[in-house]
Length: 229
Image 1 (cartoon, rainbow, N blue to C red):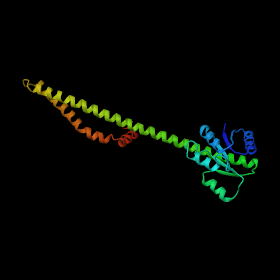
Image 2 (tube, helix red, strand yellow; image 1 turned 120 degrees about the vertical axis):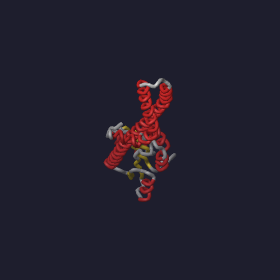
Image 3 (cartoon, rainbow, N blue to C red; image 1 turned 45 degrees about the horizontal axis):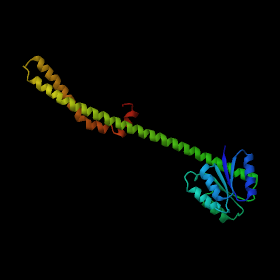
Image 4 (cartoon, rainbow, N blue to C red; image 1 turned 180 degrees about the vertical axis):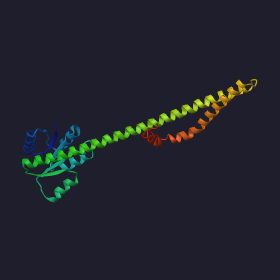
């Protein structure tokens, strides 16, 4: 249920507003001054605030100022109520961050129209925020995927390099041992095979720096898109 906070020091006005909103199935909470209203808003985060301008403890401008500085309450729609209708007063309210302004006395239709309009705009903002939040999460997921791909690439290349570095001395030793054997077709064949294998591994080892360049995050993403890797 939509929660509306009414901050009004005049008991009769406060009760009338609450009754009108309650009849429209809004969940209504009231506060008799700005100080109590700010405390309730920060704790319960209403969907909309209707607030009188001139009040003891904390006036409407001061209450709005405090709520505007809090990220949790800064985006809550705020409607000012006042008995003064001059342009300077209205301008000050809008400059302070109010979303709308109702001059007392106001009709039931005026109140409900203002409330409905502000709640509708809030829904639009919330949907937009939700979309942007989803896009941010998707972007973060892509970044993590690229980072993981980079880590996997680094691990793979590191392991390959380590394996090659370990195997080359063994191949070299095997060739040295074979070279000391009596000449013959079998020795020459084995020696040739070992020599070719050693040359291949040395060639792979020399290509690792180039592989690191090719498998950079930018190129890895491109290769994934082409379904090459």
